[in-house]
Length: 426
Ligand code: FAD
Image (cartoon, rainbow, N blue to C red; front, side):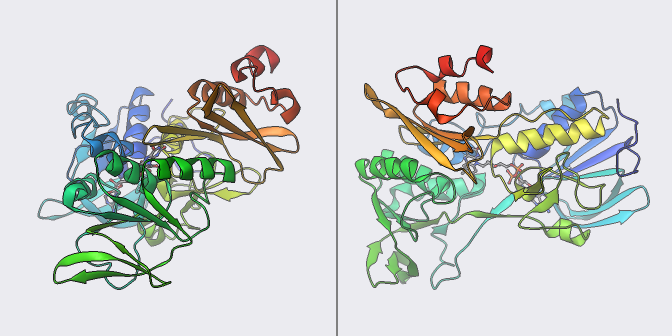
């Protein structure tokens, strides 16, 4: 029910709610708030000119030409009007100011500066791609990939000549695989001694390294870029610190993203790599809600982590909406993530940090299917599934219902995980 007090003491019965950012988190929040019975004003402000769309296809199906800008929309064009959600597109929020009982929002609309007041604020500002401060990186063919405009620029360059992807993270590797499938000559340079060092374990990283090399991508590990070289207006290549130069017509920087926290900082909210929020998505003032990639989550036990995934955006949006609706918090399912790199389908569930042991399950009949299980003190905490969607579903279900068996119970790779993790066993 909308109209109760929240734990911050602020009234939880807003007549108007504003969400800054209209992507996976912002749109899901609005949807969940409306479907939960909120009838007041609901405004989404987006700096992007497009209708809200899904980002994951930008490095995969959309870039490959298997999806269109319409097919990747998060909701049908009529959805917003039908649900009485005011969508203000192409409007960047420049300033936020707390006022008694609410917030004042100043944004740059089509031509004018607009100042409006709302009863409740949700920040869903996401993240921006990191850039490199090296000579040559300001060239227009040195690209990043975060939004549809970036994807359009990238798509226009795939056939332009060799591409060098800087950074062996998810987005770089997805683009590399898609560009190879489109016939481009692709190199990936990674400063570390393996791919995806922050995101997956060694086994999955080396399996994916072999897969990318089998796609004929030139993956160079331990390679630190020194400069982007160009002649006249054309990029020639990426020079490495060790003097080698890789030919390039286009360079994609895939070196991670940083949370957009500037608006939160204006409000004096605690930020630590992201806007610090609790389980219910309340920021440090106990009033502002923040959801999605722009947040750093503090767990009940005090550990801090930042997730960049659609699942996290959706789950935090649901939790924040539930708070405003006066619903009691629900148990959050185990976090999950996916990445498609050519034919390699990776799905990750749970959090592997702090694990004390691992178990690799491979069916000799189907060696492309690999499942890496992570345990802390003999209790399952996370898993990486390569080309094993049924195993992923079983693992996600088990972890979400708190079933955490040890390695001995899951060791026999000839017995499907679906059987070993069946609800009857939990
Ligand atoms: P964002 O999607 O970043 O949206 C934030 C929005 O807020 C943006 O539109 C931004 O312009 C707007 N904004 C920011 N500041 C302002 C302001 N001052 N005023 C107005 N508007 C503002 N995740 C997966 O789980 N699986 C995948 O396979 C996967 N693939 C991906 C591929 C790509 C190419 C990218 C870029 C991301 C991928 N992700 C994937 C990550 C996923 O897309 C993000 O986790 C998700 O988009 C986060 O949603 P969000 O709403 O929190 O933030």
